[in-house]
Amino acid sequence: SPIEVLLNKLDGQEGEEVGDDASGKAVTLEDFLDEEDITAECRTDNQRLLHYLVQEENLLRLVDLLFTGVGQPLEAAFAIDRNHSVDSVSSADTDDDNDDAPDAVEYARVRLKFPSVASDILSSENSTI
Image 1: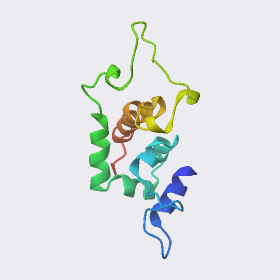
Image 2: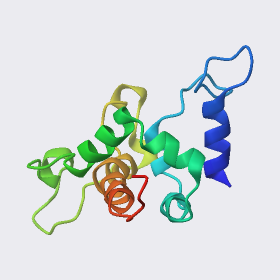
Image 3: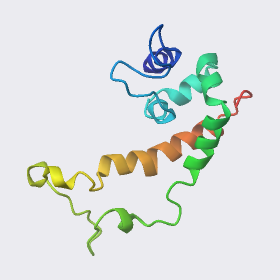
């Protein structure tokens, strides 16, 4: 499963920095939250996953995610017209100078998906968590 792949990356291999994958990018809690089956894995008592999730910094991050963006309206991140449609820029219109522009998919992951998954995990009624 993708969760097991991430856990194996966390375990690391001899000679590699623990938590870094082949690209050198550290495996993060958000990588786990991106996986579709994380809540199912929590419910089935995947001990390796639960051990990772109950580390203090990860539990604090899960709680923090519940409050991500509270008080910041959608309009602050995206230009929304009066008809409530999001102004989008086609990929042909983008250039390298616009790398800091908000991305709708990333916005949805950080402001919508991650808090929802964090809530599901914290309320999963798993005695370990």
